[in-house]
Amino acid sequence: MNEISNSLVAADVAHSMHPYTNMRAHEANGPMIITRGEGVHVYDDKGKEYIEGMAGLWSVAVGFSETRLKDAAMKQMEALPYYHTFAHKAHEPSIRLAEKLAEMTPEGLDRCFFTNSGSEANDTVIKMVWYMNNALGRPEKKKFIARNKAYHGITIASGSLTGLPGNHRDFDLPAIPVTHVTTPHYWRFAEEGESEADFCARLLKEIEDTILAEGPETVAAFIGEPVMGAGGVMVPPEGYWEGVAAICKKYDILLVADEVICGFGRCGATFACEKFGFTPDILVLSKQISSSYMPLAAIMVTDAVYDAIADNSAKIGTFGHGFTGSGHPVATAVGLENLKIIEEKGLVANAAALEEAFIGGLHAAFDDHPLVGEVRGTGLIAGIELVAAKTAASAFDPAAKVGAKCADFAAEEGLISRAVGDVMALCPPLIITEAQINQIIERMGRALDRTLDWAKAEGLV
Image 1 (cartoon, one colour):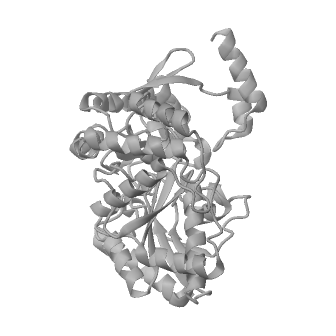
Image 2: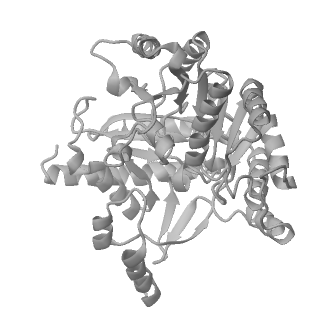
């Protein structure tokens, strides 16, 4: 490591607080410093090349160092580097992107509100829903239903919707009225002898029973990721989302689709709600909207939601919510160009076409691996769950950190993955090729074999 790298490591350890990190472990181990990216690859400060198998954080659809996005940012910086959208102000990039999103999203989702992140977007959704129900004379209709293992963000409100213990513990969350129901993951949560159809029916009954127990007049919204990402990449059973939509309609409950990870082609369709056969009342978008070259998120709502909010803003004089960067001109200019690239390069179709090579290839390579309990996924998002024996019940003790060890081995093999507990998550850029998918599978295979040897040596298997 050169002198500059040593200096950076020391400065990082001395001054930086990293998200989702054991800070004392970071002091001992230091950071992996990434210096540049190209296509599906990134490079560290020692020059080592990695396939970025997580597209950053589920987000870099068009790959790294896309010249068109750099040029779009520079062009907008030169013309109008910043302006806000408060109090009737506007600029062309945010107008054009809102128009484009209304065109792309499922029919009826024609109104757009911009934020800087998915967390801010889901926080805004909560406030919108509360504001709407107050406006409609339903002040008691404020509760949310979410799922265990869901991820909806990390603000106080959106973090409350999240269903991961690590995001609640010692933060005094949940801090809003939310009830979490069963994770729709058949392999892990089905009862003995229960078919997938019966599992789905049980979960739908649980949702309806929860609504009835809470009182439909108090339940405002059901929120869910069409495919759960940060909880472990879980694809719902067939019929689940159609059933959820029917229940929400029956009890006049808003359906919120959090497509922060799923949107813009990740699941092999432009939006995953289309793939799973439902249309939400509110659609939350981020990450691949700009390939995360700029912080950006968007909330799309139906006219019914918009009209209630708009009428109330007229009644009381304002919709008193927004961010300095809402609809930032550089971010929205980059987002607009990013969506053009996704369309022009056919990246949604690429995700669909490569699903068999990716998901099928992972199945073929690892279904029989002694350390793998389940391979799952759709489009270009997958999870490989590690177990002590080939059953769902044989999870490792979390303290063993088997997934984290596998992620370390994968990085040594030139693949960046993400350990979600003991699930190895993979979510490559949408520009990935079949040859590069094969490289991901080969490198993950070597990492799994090394993890198995280590686990045997540690007496874990």
